[in-house]
Length: 125
Image 1: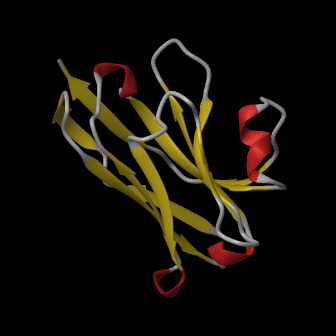
Image 2: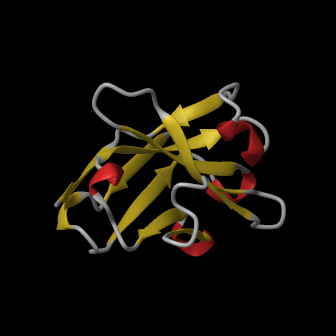
């Protein structure tokens, strides 16, 4: 199983990026898929998640209204569209196959089956 995260880069405040998480060896539509991020000196946090059952999406309060998670089953890829980026969004972003429900990623007590390798997002002020 491999999760290939891509799409990170350097963007100015207010800009947009779209991250992609392409999978091989696993069908993403069978699992809850989450995006996490880890900023320098901070713990990893759950950002957004899309469920396997009905495609429901969840986002952390800090990104609601700005980030949108989606899935293309034909391409076996999950996306994170990030708009209105701010310097506090600077982090390494990871996608992951969540073992369980999306809501667990905001509790700190989540289990991950597979992690992607991370992609760096830097937002300049």
